[in-house]
Amino acid sequence: MSKERDYRVGAKDVDRRIDLLTKSRPLGSQEMYVKDRKLILEKYECDIDVPRYRLQNLRTLTTEQPNFIKEHGLKDNHFSDNESDQAQIDQHTILYNTAITKGKRVGFTSEMSSGQKQPIIIDGNGLIISGNTRTAFWRELYNSDKKKNRRFAKIEFLLYNTQNEKDIKEMESFLEIKKDPKIEFNWVEKAASYRVLIEKNKYDIKEVASEANKSVKSIKDAVESHKLYEEFLDLYPALLPMTVVNSNAELAFKAMNDVITKFDKANMTPEKNTAKKLMFISIRRGVIRDPISKKSELNDIKGNRHHLFQFLASSSNKTKLGEVLNKVVDDVSAATRDKDLQSTLRSKKITPELERKIATQTLVSSKNLYDARNQVTYLDNLQSASTQIHEGFSNWLTNQGKIDASTKRMIDKMKKTLDQFIKE
Image 1 (tube, helix red, strand yellow):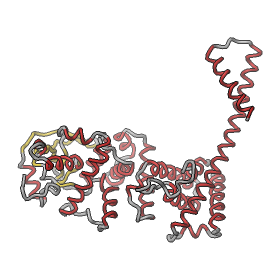
Image 2 (tube, one colour; image 1 turned 135 degrees about the vertical axis):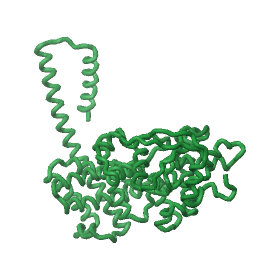
Image 3 (tube, rainbow, N blue to C red; image 1 turned 120 degrees about the vertical axis):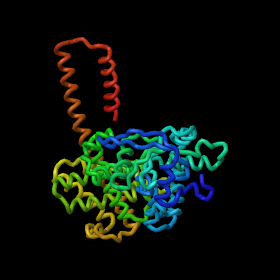
Image 4 (cartoon, helix red, strand yellow; image 1 turned 90 degrees about the vertical axis):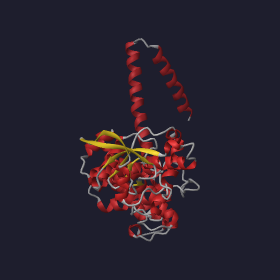
């Protein structure tokens, strides 16, 4: 343990780090698999302040780092250099905060305080591929009381001795979709891992689904939703990424993807672009929550925020899809007094006030259409059920069959419901 070394940063210089790591106490070797490829990795025990964090770590790269950059007014490339001490310190802050906030809620901190159970994995640059959050927590724990927590002065690791970025990303993403992490990954982080394997490492989507124990459709939906998430942040660059990873936003992007798929299958590109912009605006103003109030700007609109997406996605034919969209567009045009709404939606300079009006009417109009469709469905179901009940009782009166106790209870319950229905 070096007295001069900042425990949050790790040893400087790649060659120096690798020298320290490979000359630390050997613990034999361990097998592991990446896809169907068997690896034999050497196992060591080193001082906990030797390895550096891998700043390209997917968990923090996708949401936490962009959030940190915007909150602190840093340059976009702040986390691009693994040899930057300040970037390492900031990464340590992010990781440790994750451990003591998200981790505390799921028992991570108490479990990790009992000692190391699995080795972390370090690449040929001396950077941590897997185990960044654990290492940050143990470093703080050890340095808070070195005598009491002396067992955390050392850390066990497996050395994946390669500097090939493609291979490193493959291992990281593969491990992320395979393991059952104590601190759950949000949907954006999971989707990013899927995309790395599919787009960078050329995995077949069926392989990713199998390794992640998911359906092919769920992987495909996650990937497409992640693309929409990135497009959404490009449209609203001032938004903190962490405000877009809640479960409501996930459902909205998945529903939005269903709608876009419908338009694509119907070869309705102009209509798709219109619906897409309306949905983006609705998500921004009606789904994304303020980090302080925990409410969206249109929180006073009652009902499900996804009516537009649900209704459009369930419109099974091209004519119906166009009719629904045209009705929504007409209602929004009337509410905003905008006779050329299509041009407005194509503009990149829509004011927040106008967006709120567009989102409000989009959600209200869509909800009305959604409820009207459901009302028709309810009547159809009621008519069908009434016909079946009538036929069932007619057959019984003709044949005078026996009725068991459970059927009698069901009939009694039905009678009470019908009495209430008649009173209405």
